Image (cartoon, rainbow, N blue to C red; front, side):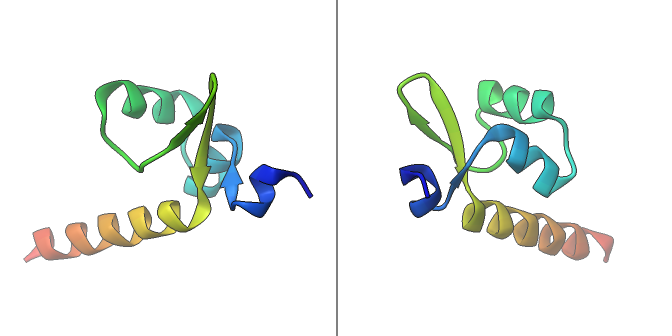
Length: 68
């Protein structure tokens, strides 16, 4: 197990697959400073899977409130 796995960090590709988005969408969000928080280690970008899950739940909750 790598240190990244021990810390619960996943790559942008794995994050995009988890969220059902493209890697480019995540990149654009990072550039615009929107979307889920991420971690940079050197020039590498990683996401915490628990933060991604929280982001999804927050977005779903936000959408449900706006339906009313």
